[in-house]
Length: 379
Image 1 (cartoon, rainbow, N blue to C red):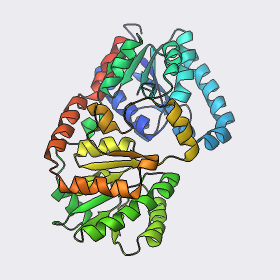
Image 2 (image 1 turned 180 degrees about the vertical axis):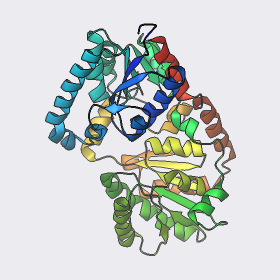
Image 3 (image 1 turned 90 degrees about the vertical axis):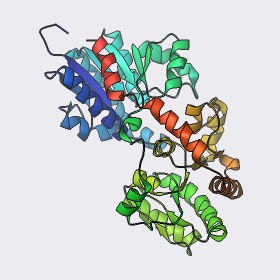
């Protein structure tokens, strides 16, 4: 960047979470450089900050091997055209946000063309397919890590990396009042609630909801005062879950709010959920949880051979020890899940919640500002 010219910054995000990160980063950069221009790919939040997306971000939000295969020609064409466009524009720096299967190739080609590259959100190379680090080193000048232990991994491999904190830790308040959440959801104020979160995708719900509902049946017998609430990401998933409730738990009265998962977790006393980002949200909201997951059998055969992290849930990975029960595959039986929840209900939760607070404080370091600091060093 010439000292007399405003910076031109390329950002490529591939899904909603990346759009959120990108918008926060753009806002932080714009505070320092009000005349900065942004090019690349983003969603509606980045558009509000001035991104004119080269193509629709939703084109990259493809899940599953079959779906990716079907969309592969379109994805490859998008990638080729995007690379050519970005090289012709010569941005001062390019930031790829998550979406490593797409972005790392874009980053590698731009880096080869002499453009500085940053990857925001570390691929899970510390957990599986560690050999990918060679490709990352060829593609990326700097990695922005959301989790503190990820920087240690990159230090070991001599790739510059910065822990910037997790934006969820900035977004979720340190104390989320249960009473307020219940009032807003119109839940009973003085009873015990278990929130059931069986996943956000159709396949996950089909696989996990029957197990979770059978556990709920047993808990309802043991604790007659216990109430149940299950937040759903959309009306379609709520309809799917209702059918499963009718099939497996017709006697249970389960409230199904749509689009209110964090508020539901705040309103609950205990949580039964699948692995993934939702477990981190649960930690930040500070509610005791049991994490259980059953993979598709073929996926599990692949994962168990390649996965080498000591835990699969983010709370335990962040703590460096098992602080919440995590049950996978055959260990995620109805009996084991019920036993873990009973133990959770019967024990004092305060020591666990104190650990959650400590982790929240570690992650709450103004992610967008720290990420912008790194971008600034490339301008």
